Amino acid sequence: MINKFNKLFWFSPPVVLPALLFVSPGAMAAGHYYDARNDAMGGTGVASSTYGSAVLANPALMTKSQPQDEISIILPAVGAQISDKDKLVDKVDDIADTVDRYKSMLDNFTFADIPRLRAASGDLANRLRDIRGDKAWGQAGAALAVTVPNDRLPFAFVTKAYGTAYGTSNISQHDIDLLQGIANATAFPSFQDKLTSTGLGRAAIVYDFGIAMAHEFDIGGHPFSFGVTPKLQKTTLYNYSASVYSYKRSDLTNDKYKNTHTDFNLDLGAATDLGDNWTLGLSGQNLIAHNLDTKEVNGYRDTYQIRPLVTSGVSFHTERLTTALDIDLTPTKRFKIQQDSQYAGIGAEYRLLEWLQLRGGYRADMKSNDTNVFTGGVGISPYKKVHLDLAGMVGKDKTWGAVAQLNFTF
Image (cartoon, rainbow, N blue to C red):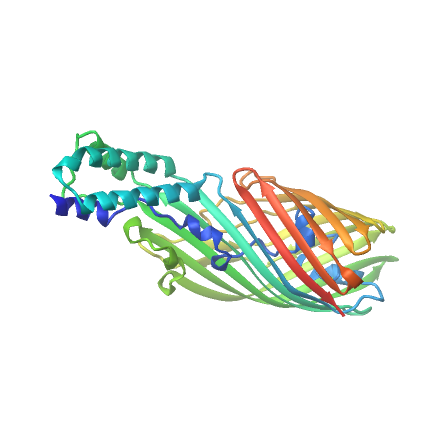
C-alpha cells in the first residue's frame, strides 16, 4: 500500500508552475522597448522623445536635434515589469512547501499516519481550488542605440530585445475530487490513479536589428519629419507544457521546448511642430504582421502574434517643462492565450536644474486587461555628456517595474 501511495503522490506533486520564472529577466523581455525617460513619463514618447532615444519610439524625432547636439549612445537601456494579480508566486511557494511535507510523511508512512494523510490530502485539494485558473506574467527588455545627428539625414543603429513570459495553471477537477475523496475517507488511491494537473509556461523573445533614417520635408510651407527603421527580426519562442510531477523551473528554456523564426519588419514615424511649443507625432512599429507558432508539446501549442502597433502622441514643451500624451490606436497582442491590451499614457518632465530632471506620469490599459500604473523617475546629466536615467512603476495587484538607462553624448 505504501508503494501505491508513493506512485500516486510522490511522482505527481500538485502543482509547481512557471510563475517563478517571472522574477528572472533573462527568461523574458518586454513591450516593444524600454526607455527610462519615456517610461517615467507614463510610457509616452511618440511626440516627446529626445533625438537620442527617438529611434526607439518614433524615428522621425531624430530630426529634432540641435546644431550643438552630438553623437548619442544608449549603452544600455534595461527594464522589467512583473504583474502577479492572483498572487500566484506566493501560492506556488505555499504548494511547494506542502508537497515537501507530504513527501516527508510518505517516506516514513505507517497506518497510524492515515489521519495525517487525509488532512494533507484535504489541504492539497483546497490549494488546487485556490490556484485553479490563476496566472502571472512578466516582461523585460534591453536596447543599445547609436544616433548620429545632422541637418540632412540623421541616422541610427539600434538593437533591442523585447517580449513576454506568461504562466498559468491547468488544474483538473479529477485531481481535486480524488484528493478530497481521500480527505473525506470516501475514496482510496489505487495503482491506476494519476493526478493530471499541468503547469503551462509561454515565453517569447524578439530581437530587432535595425538602421533608422529620418528627414524633414517642407510641405506647403510647413515642416514635416518622417523616419523609417527597416530591421531584421528574430523571434525565439518557448512552450513549456508539462505534467506537474516532472516540472523543473529550468526546463522552460530547454531546446526541446524552443523554436526560432527570422523575418523582416519595419517601423515608421512622422512628426510636426505647431508653433514653438507643440509637437504632434505618429509612430507605427512592426508594420508587417506575423503569426508564429510554438512547438507542440504534450498536446499544447500556442501562437505568438506580432502585429502593427500604431500610436499617436502630442507634447507641449518649454525651456523647463515638457508634457506628453500618447494613445495607442491599435492593440498590443502577445500569445493568443493572453488578452489584448491598448494603452494611453500621460506624463511630464520638469528640469529642476540644468543637470537634474524630475518626471512623473500615469499609464492605463483602455481594455482593462492589464494593470494601470503610476510612473516616476529622475534624470541626472552632469556636463551634458553622461546621462543617467532611472524610472519606476507601480500599480495594484502586485504590479511593479523598473528601468535604468545610461546615455553618452560626444
